[in-house]
Length: 417
Image (cartoon, rainbow, N blue to C red; front, side, top):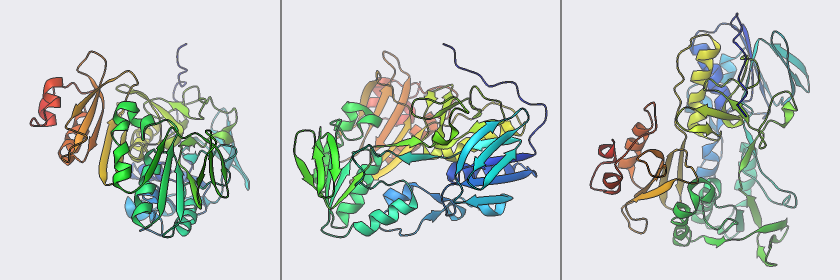
């Protein structure tokens, strides 16, 4: 079945834009509108009752940054100064696309505009039976977790993904007794696959963190975590870090959604199957990419850069989209990681360097039987980070000579075809 396409663009450019969300993607959208000299009306609905802040420090700097990292300081964009109206603590409740514009319902009434940008972000997953666990996705979540993590406390983290590993890192360094439970068997398995993810497992013991692989959780209680094998992992604090889902339930059936709640968008962030005045960016968007296929949200760089393409097209500037490569960075268990691109499950993995050595290493995912690289992970190899970033700036996926790419005496950029 072919993908639904957006309808033809309207004749008139919008004179009013409603931005739903108050995170990085929403803030950058408003800033980009003003930078492109949009002098129409901008109104913002933000579910959280605080000014926009950066989310990565919530885990990376959980204990040494007790206050939010405000985006007005981090990226120099003050949402409340740029928009005509900003309604904090006002979540959207529904959307209706009209013949000439959009209408968004909220608890205090409805708003109308010529165009809407959906940037409501994501929320942490908390399965039934896990209600006693904490999550970490908002500044309020961070404050609760920070207060609970005092030296000697037993912390059990469910999930050895990016967030779980980062919290384990800062907590164990602060004298917290940390155990991480990973159901799939390999840390970062969802992001890196079993082959590469397994190389990160020894990091846990080296950092003083207990890692239990293949641990399937059935319930979280006040005294610990019950596992499928009948055992109980004692805990004073439990953190569920098994991922996030796009916050789009409020849309109901107004727009076509994927099973996880994400919204498919084109290269300019137009929601497919909706008029061009309906856009989505950030964690809610599943973006079509000429290089990478369908790119899920959750990438900080996408929330930062996506609004540039969105706003340019919305205001009629036209031109090709920049197609930013997905990018994840992490500091965990004594190691620095950077991941570029999108890994496919059938990709062939090539290692550059020795994961068991002390000089850092990289992993490259090649499309089967080709020299086309779909993703690159660097671990403690800063000289490979810049090269990997540049390799993913071309119009197509990079092509590398496999023999030269494996050779650490050859600069990664010099392995390019």
